[in-house]
Length: 388
Image (cartoon, rainbow, N blue to C red; front, top):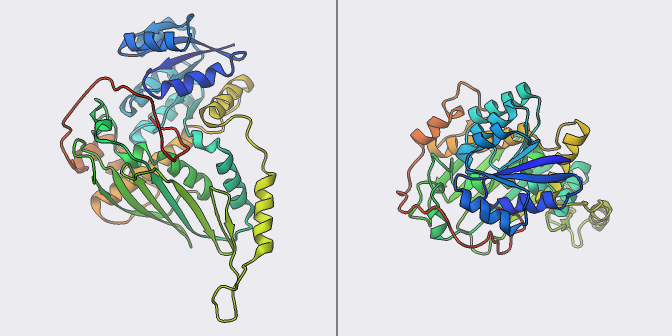
C-alpha cells in the first residue's frame, strides 16, 4: 500500500485526492499539508479522509515520515524547495504544473531525484485524453505526410478577481502569466508531438487584467527545420475554444478527429472531393486507438503508482517538465527582448536563472489586491483541460 500525502490543499488538490481515491486498493492518503491548516482540515472532512493527519508545513510532514509519495499542489514558486526536500529524503513526488518557474529550479529537482533514488513526475494530465492519444497516433503514423504547420490555441478566460489570489499575478510568486500557467498544457502536447523547435519569436501583453503584473496574452512562432508552429496563450478568450490542428503535406488532422486531405488539379488548385481514401485511412486509424482506461489526473496518477510498484520511470518525468519550461523560458525571453531566441537555452544564459525574469520582465500593471482565499470551484466553459 503506497502512502500518499497532499501538500497544498487549494483548488487543484481535489483532482489529486479523487484520483488517489479511485485506486484505494493500491494507495492511501495518510497526510494533508497546508500553511493554513484549517483549510486542510476542511478538505479532510470534505473528502472523508478520516485517517489523514494534518500538517502546517512540509518540513513537519517530512520529519514525521511514513510517506511514500507526495503530491505537490502549491504555488509555482514553492515547487522546487518542496520537491527537492522530499526527493533528497527518498520520497517520490508528483508535482503540479508548471514543474518550476525556471530552468535552474528544474535542474535542482532533477539532481535531487537522481541523488535521492526516488522518482519525480511533472503533471501533464492532458496526455491522458482520448482525443490527444488519437492525434498522437495519427501524427506518428506519418499518413498526413511531413508536418508543415501546427496551430495551437491555448484559449482560456479569467475574470479580474482571478488575479486577486495572493500568489497569482506576480512574476515572483506565479513565475509568469498565461504562457507559463495556462498554456503549459499545450506546450507539453506540442513538444510531445513535434519535439523542440530550433528558435522562437514572441510578443507579450496584458490586454484585460489591470490588477496583474504578468501577461494575459502572448503569441509565439516556433521555427522547425521545414515547419512552423504558432502558439496563442490567453486568459482573455471568451468561450475558451481551444484548438490544435496539424497540417501535413498530404492531410490535416485535429483534436476533434477531423481529417482533410486535398489533392491537386493540374493547375495546382484543389480538386473537388479531395483524397477520400486517405481521409478514410486516418479515420480508421483513429477508430482503432484503444480508449484509455483512465483519463486526466487519474490516468497520470495510475501511471505514477504503477511506476513506484514496478520500480520503473513514470511515463511523464521531470525531463518532460523541464523541456516545457525551456520552451516557455525562450518565449518569455523572445517577447521581452523582441528578437528570435535559439534553443536549447544554455546554463550560462541569464534567463536560465529565475532572478533574470523577475528583473527584466515587464510589469504590465501593479497587483492591486491580495486575498488568501477565493470561493468557488475550478470551472471551464468549452475546454476539456483542468487548470488551477
